[in-house]
Image (tube, rainbow, N blue to C red):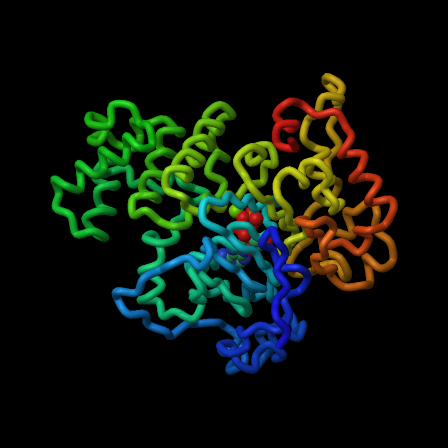
Amino acid sequence: MSSTPIDPAGFVAGHPGPLDAAEHIGPVAGAAVTAGALDTATAPRQARRRSWIKGTVVLPSDHVWKPQDGRLLEVRDLAVEFRMREGVARAINGVSFNLDQGETLAILGESGSGKSVTAQAIMGILDTPPGYVTAGQVRYCGTDLLTLAEKSRQKVRGAQIAMIFQDALSALNPVFSVGYQIAEMFRVHRGMNRHDAEAAAIRLMERVHIPGAKVRVKAYPHQFSGGMRQRIMIAMAIALNPAILIADEPTTALDVTVQAQIMDLLKELQHESGMGLILITHDLGVVADVADRIAVMYAGRLVETAPVGPVYAAPRHPYTQGLLESVPRLDTKRGGILPAIGGLPPNLLSMPAGCPFNPRCRYAIEVCRTGGPPELEAVTDTGYAACWRVNDQEVVAASDRIATAPRDEATLEVIA
Ligand code: ADP
Ligand code: MG
């Protein structure tokens, strides 16, 4: 078995080779479901069942989670599919990345690119059926969470890895006070009595800068603004001091000023606790000054990964280039129209042959249509891109053009 090459930035170079995943998914890797047969309805029932990674390992209740050399999370070659009447939608196709303590990874991509499903697979909260993890590993502090029995997995969820959901604003229960809902975390997980749990809830509300926490602990969700409700959701997520916080589009429903305040809060909490932060967003502008690294997803694959500076300075994948060109810059004429990436993301049930981005790519040539999906390859010391033409003159020149285009100050700061 070849070892997986890891780049200095922590991403996997190219395809991570054969995985030990085979140990727990058995012979299925080559079976009907992954062999390209879209219709699982006709696949033997046995094969379908075996192709779902379902863990059985029960950890001792006093298991200590300890990051190795600061490494919290290693996602390896993760694959998720949704088995539906209309066919199998391969929502995640071999996604690999790492997260270290104190690090912020931004996962960026259009709606439907697989960002939330990736997060759900890490958390173990995938909608099953129809969603199944069919390959890969999710190693937390060295232990593959996919091998754990649900009972052990539950102990990781919330306490070790917490998540703020995309629809956080509707996640609060309207009939209980926010204080009660935060305190419940401490009562259920820490066995605190009512009085201590409320005191802890107030401290937590102060930590996320909710003014007048002592009084407002008794208020109901509808008495808070959207930004304040999001702070409450963040408070509940960090209540048990998780080592990793996954924030799925935490600011999408908020206006721009409040977005910046929530981002600042997340950064501040991360700084205090040293937690690793996975920030999921479709908005390149939001993550520019908080992320350390960016992973760009397209149709369930990582298409570019690099530290945030290089991605902004000189993106190499034509998709990332398109995303960046649609962010306003200094030389954008007032009232001018920003170039958008034409077309729509592919339908997972009828993926284009070749590179999934080829129907929308201005550089697409024959190999892009026939060569299969390209794999990530190193384009700089720290950057990786998955594109058949990544070293071709035209694509490199486009990257250089973006690198030399005038930028606004915020972007320049990120590049510096
Ligand atoms: P996003 O990047 O916007 O967060 P998602 O990760 O939510 O995208 O979804 C990725 C793909 O997986 C989508 O194309 C969606 O159709 C599919 N998908 C997600 N959840 C389900 C589900 N419960 N049932 C069927 N398909 C799903
Ligand atoms: Mg989503």
